[in-house]
Image (tube, rainbow, N blue to C red; front, top):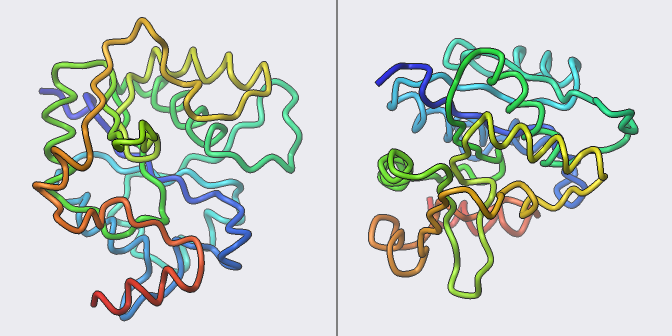
Length: 217
């Protein structure tokens, strides 16, 4: 399978309003949150991109992480007369789809920098599942999904995210089209077998979240 088949894209450009700092660069024990993710992802020997809000943020990451472990940075693309104050995962994903489409990648594994405890076994399972579907998204029993821990078809997702942004619709559930062949993976029934504490979905949104994770370590 070609190395251009799938790339990882980690969104780092969120506002971090509740957290109060750039989450990806937050120091947890001896490493930054983004480092925990990169240590797992580099094991797959696939290209890794960080999706930033602006060039200033890109520089802050270059200054503070070992950027040799990533393939490159993508900066949010404010097409369709978007206001510059918009900070949305939809914008980050759209920008990633647009850039990776130009580079001829087929699929994108999207992640957010605020869930640093991702498990290799879970990612491996989703990638294997993605060989048979357009899109793979973990789903909870309550029907909520994890759109920032999912695999998307770049060509198709570029079209849907373009439409969403044109209409100023920023809910990530708008990305997936009904005519896609999508696999919704049961989190409690399937993924929990690989990640018993479901740490792959543990988000760092507040200082209390950091405290809980520090206890785990």
